[in-house]
Image (cartoon, rainbow, N blue to C red; front, side, top):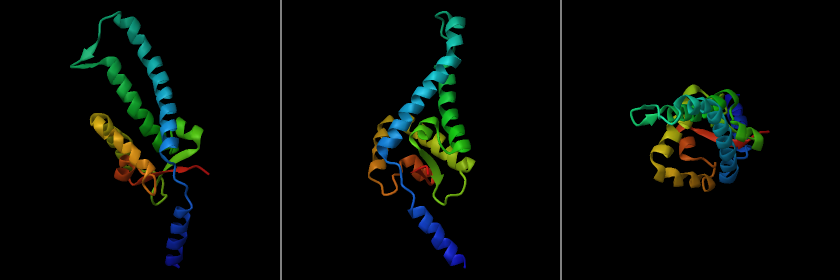
Amino acid sequence: MSEQVIYASEAHVSEQRYAGFWMRFWAFLIDLIVISSLNGILISPFKFVNEGIAISVGFWTVPGIISAIVFYAYFIFMTKFFGQTIGKMILGIKVVRENEEPLRWSDVLFRELVGRFIYRAFWFLTVLYIIVGFMDEKQGLHDMIADTRVVYDR
């Protein structure tokens, strides 16, 4: 009986259509537009308060810190609570775990925070996004770290 469940589960996984590089790229561009809009709303008050004087913490400016927080928070919370960002929703794709259980906080944090930080901190690794187009399950480095896949939403 348990063997049948395993086989049924494996058959269900193989039915998934994985989203490739270009679908994920366009979803990311849409997300960047959303994030830029959010940052514009949140940071615009600093333009009036500052009046040309940069508020900074070390080498970071306050608007820069807010922008980074919005960027990472957007991807973390949208992926955790909806399994997809607005860009992914528009294009009909979503993030799932390999075993199709609900996404855990650890999955999302490794995928969205650690994975994106690695790509941003080591800018030369951004070429690794291209591997999505060549992998059987269309995984990027951040998907491999978190054991997730991006699939077409049914």
